[in-house]
Image (cartoon, rainbow, N blue to C red; front, side, top):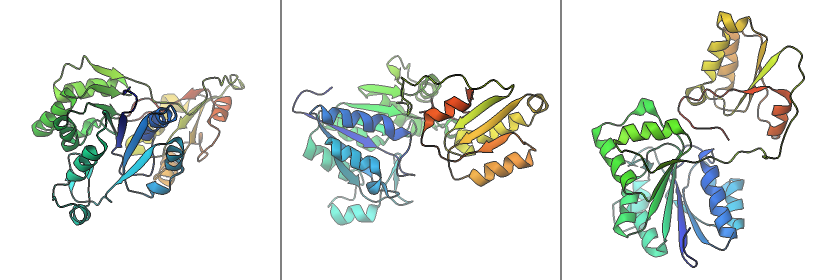
Length: 302
């Protein structure tokens, strides 16, 4: 933790949604530090109605100073982050997209920077600015896309910012191992940490009623490409599983809800049920026996 009177900057690179699982760890940490009297800044991309999200209001209420990156576009990908170059040029004399962040660092002069990414790739230019200003930084990776294995040039860039980071965190052992192999680093200082969970650790639901049927619960975003919903449906469609007394219950919403339901019908599954988003997560475990989450590249669920 930084010394009293200093400041910490949290940088999130989430671009595709207003909020997500990757935002829970850094945001809760930032809010807790701010409540303890630490001066905390959050630098976030201004996308997907994010400024209006209730979690942003909670951060501000806790005392976190929220600052928005320039509005992103589909062009201008710079080391893992997207910027609207025209907007930056209008506000800054420099045409370098990284200049915005550099100006922020020089203004705030934090004692520490935490980069949080929805994958294991980080904005190389921003980490270089930290090193140029002798500001230590940490990297927090929330997933690894192994289908997007880096070529030599990107791998060298990744190696550079991982090697110079004061701390490197991953939310699963497999994510850590994949990153170690991608970067060619020994990874002795790569640490595995746990994301917060959205159920109280004091909850101790009774074992569901034993009526001869085992109920499996998929709790998460309905998006086969990432969450692997199709994998569990395909498994249940095999002869061995069709003969077993199981039910699969989906809890959550997502961009492929109709597609997942159609898939279950195409596979002839009569034991799959879709419940949509459920606020009381603890209730799920009073009704189901087992969590199944065949994610293709993520760490542990929240």
